[in-house]
Amino acid sequence: MSVRELLEAHGRPPREVYFDLENSGYVPREVVEAMVPYFNSVGYGHPSITHRPGWEAYEVIHETKELLSRVLGAGGLGEFTIVHSGTEANNLAILGHALARRERRGKILVSAIEHLSVIQPAELAEKLFGFRVVRIPVDGEGFVDPGVLQELVDRETSLVSVQTVNHEIGTVQDVRELSRIVKEVNPSAVFHTDAADAFGRMPLDLRRLEGVDMLTISSHKVHGPRGVGVLFVREGVELEPVLRGQLSSERLWPGVENVPLIAGFRKAVELAFDGFEEHVSRMRGLRDALVRGLVERVPDVLLNGPSDFGRRAPDNANLSFLYVEGEALTVELSLHGVYVASGSACTSRILEPSHVLLAIGRKHEEAHGSVLLKTSRYHAVEDVEYALEVFPKAVARLRSISAARPGSPL
Amino acid sequence: MSTRIPLPYTPRVLELFRNPKNAGPMEDADVVESAGSPACGDMIRLYLKVSERNGEEFIERATFESYGCAANIAAASILTEVVTGKSMREAWAVSWRELADELGGLPPIKYHCSILAVGALKRAIRSYYGRVGRRPDWLPESLTIEERQTLEEEKMIEMLYSGRGFRITVAFPRGGSGDQGS
Image (tube, rainbow over all chains, first blue to last red; front, side, top):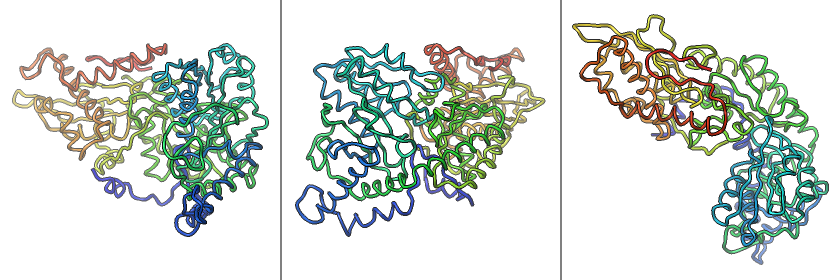
């Protein structure tokens, strides 16, 4: 099998629009340019060694953390740990907690729609150390009911993890209230929130989030390079490193820091927060136009996630196109240069579709037809218009040969 | 999203996905059978027009409808091409591996698409002889590997649904007459 042959057969469509910002993102020129010098002309040293290139490297790390502290409203430099992905940051939060409290064990509460990098480490903590994992149920739009959480938290609760924004369906949780409830019932319980999909899209103020002990950020979700994640760990929160080896500037993560990528992340954060309101209103406007247009132009479509857009991330669009299978739709759209992802089982290693869509009560056949798009300030109105032109044709083509139709004999 | 895997399709898969052969229902089909279900995320419906020559049945025409991934559509398409003009006996001998080879190969995780296509074919052939009321000597009574796997995939979904407390909204096709969908 040759991937090159596949790409040749596919060809490059005359027009291309990338909406799969969930899975990997477009890195703008300014960010790329911010990285380049750090490979070979400045800061290529190890940040913990006493020479100029080392100090230059350390400056990048130091300034990145200062910047994070500024945009998040709080956080000392020692409270930010830079790792190599959001997945690593979530693993550090969950498994690092489990390691630190392995003697006491207790319960780990995670919402049913958390990212797999939260759910699976929690399951591993159960298997390795005997913690008990409790899934916090969500409603049909992905919301955790504060009353339900209050009933689930008890004195045995060691850790609670609820996303600020869901990565697939854009549900915005009231993390301030949820963390307050947890602390009220059990002050020794630790509260973690995966804010990878909230950072750069909605105001996040650590001063207001008093109950949040740990918070995850991912670089590629703000148009930074892949390969940088950050875990905020409030001072005094017990956590043990998960990986072992020579420590450098990070107390909780060993290995040599990837300074060029961190420099790119720093630039991406600067750009995201320079004109923040404007960026958010732009992605919101484009997303609204996209969802409205798709629902108007394509029959038999379901919106997955909050219908009240005030409680939905401004960039998120997740729709199920009934009677077509999502993977086929991603390929069909790709042939026309519109790049999206699907929660179908057909893109996965297992037969089951997205656990998020199943948790909000979608039937399998509804989840299989799901498509996830995210808008950003780098999209133009014309990009959305082009997608709205391509989508109806793509869905119609696949429906015309589909074995699944309303009321048709199976 | 659930756990992902790269799917480097062959140019043949992409070509048949883009321009499938023999897609669509057949008005005058002698037999119509399905395999899989929308809940599985994979479903193929196969239409066969059968004619008799010198005491032997031949597949005169074959068409398909597919609800499924690109590999599923390509597998169903290549199946119709492979079986057209074959005697029923020759068609029965077509294996899922043969279809995968015709496609220039499939990623292992997509083998089940080819298995499902052959599962639909075998169901259709059985169904045809069931209707005629005669079992040729080459048609085994026990289920073939493709038929068993197809049943397993359908059952697995049924279990997933009942285990989760969801109502089962899709009727699974079982030989003979067409069942009703959701």
